[in-house]
Image 1 (tube, chains in turn cyan, red, green):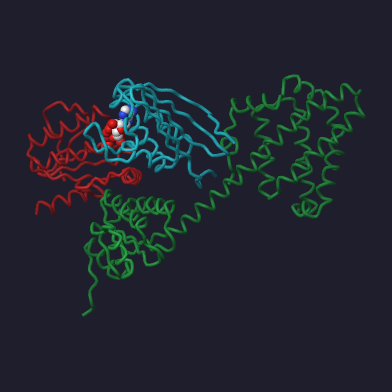
Image 2 (cartoon, each protein chain N blue to C red; image 1 turned 90 degrees about the vertical axis):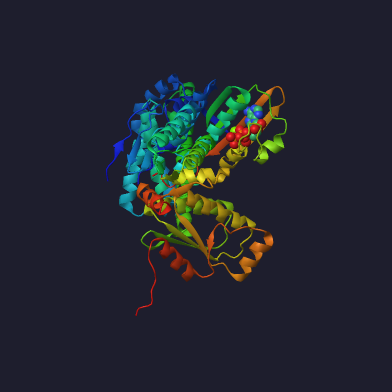
Length: 143
Length: 129
Length: 303
Ligand SMILES: Nc1ncnc2c1ncn2[C@@H]1O[C@H](COP(=O)(O)OP(=O)(O)OP(=O)(O)O)[C@@H](O)[C@H]1O
Ligand SMILES: [Mg+2]
């Protein structure tokens, strides 16, 4: 079975305020899909971190948000794309605690721990694409 | 308990600061997005300077998301306030926020916390002996 | 409780249009079946009777029907369902109606094999009668249209069945989760979580979430986690405990870990796990005493 895309929405990240718009859109999507408060906070926070990376490290890009479904389970998938400098040492960036921005460097590794699927592709000089997905948990509140 | 709204200065962050005795109480209700977060920090520090408040309580019950940026602004504000002789207590963090921060690896070490405003006031009281 | 299958299956106009396209149900098909209403009225009772001969003829499927009254009731429902096939509209109302039938079968525990078998017989019964009543070309066209609708209905029945099952599984999982993290209020604003059994990542997350929710709900100041019942305390478990403690601290409460045996203490130090930031005690009783002190209470010997 393949993952079905039920709906999608693309948002541009052109200024700092766009980060807020991205995470608000993600929050609404997660709530509509029945994510509980913990899962909603997790996916919204990951969106915020990744959108901010697009803005601070690449000067802008886009976020494609998708509502997905696989075998009756529903989830949110997000693609963060930019044409920035790329990440030279992906291993180090993902390990956490490494930052080129004199920060704590927990955004990338932290968001990885908040989602169910995480994938980064980055080419130096060309840009970065981070794709993450989070599935709604089976909840007991469908009744 | 009497409370008075601090006068003077234009609160650019639009986050109200209440003064209770020599303690400042800030209730964050709106999403602290980047520009607001910075303005919030500045407003608070200026208010501390003007009032000479000894304690600061930041109530974040209203925040359903705290990312690394906001976490850092909150922690830094506490540190800055400390340099000015003011103790800070962060109160009302929501369960989902705490779980998310911990999973990301942010422990908010060095930040004093309490369950609610009353507890926060109590903690400040013991700190200031 | 009535499960809203329409929203569970995300059956909106868009999904409906997609399904209709996939099952190739055209407006001509609908118009054609609508013209068969007289045919349906003529044969309805006989077809339903025949269908129930199949169902009641097998001990396993018969077992679902308690008595004669119930059989009469389901037969009349079945007749409505049958006539619905010839209504000539395939809109959201039609879908809702179909889902209700699927759901009521799921509720009594009728398995998919029974439905599928019954749907098969439906088609054969229709086929025979269409060819008796109409010229071959007309009968064939009518059968093609009807079989599309029956396939459409079968899919809805299966989807309802699967969704209902997933829902049941989810309820069970939630119940098990509850059971595995029994948080006890030992005193005003003091909680105790006796951990029993292995703590894997999934469970650790559950535990953390439950504890955090309860901490805020009860405005608890001290939370005792007793790990005496955890068979293996390794670096992973220790890491989970540290994380939970850190999260609880952010809320403004303290965690006290009790039930640390000599064995666990030794392993922790040998593994280099630093638990010094957490308050720990060997015995639960000492943990309770410490927790009570945090809420300003003391256990005293009666003079
Ligand atoms: N989209 C991107 N384009 C280029 N480099 C990136 C991108 N995202 C991350 N990086 C690189 O990976 C490093 C780690 O990212 P991470 O988000 O973990 O930390 P950070 O953004 O530096 O700090 P913070 O903890 O505030 O998020 C960054 O410092 C940067 O060098
Ligand atoms: Mg970052």
